[in-house]
Image 1 (tube, rainbow, N blue to C red):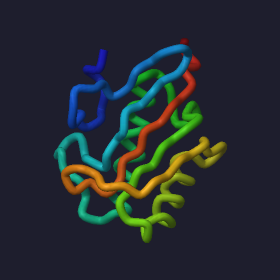
Image 2 (cartoon, rainbow, N blue to C red):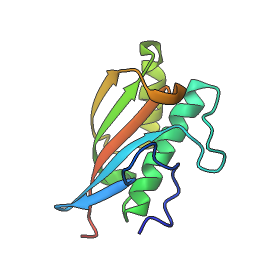
Image 3 (tube, one colour):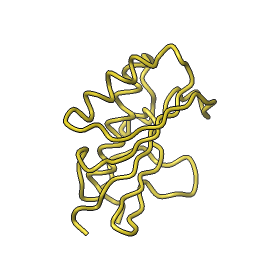
Length: 123
């Protein structure tokens, strides 16, 4: 079921997404390039990669960015809030989903992860 998912492998025993009750729950996506398994050095590039991975997981579930209704952004440096807002607006230009953001500590030197809930319109 997940053979065609183009996102980095999970850091634990969980799936990239789960479909339930007409929704798609996407696990947190870091800014890791699936091909290299590395994070970019620059925060903005890491942020863009994380949102790209999120959208790829939604696509693998049969949807697209416009199906996302709620996102959670966890990040480590409050000074990057404007960068996150910019990338968020580019990722969801038409109707941005609801969002929760929080400053946290993340594993393995990650600076940002994003998860989402999307509507499963193909269900």
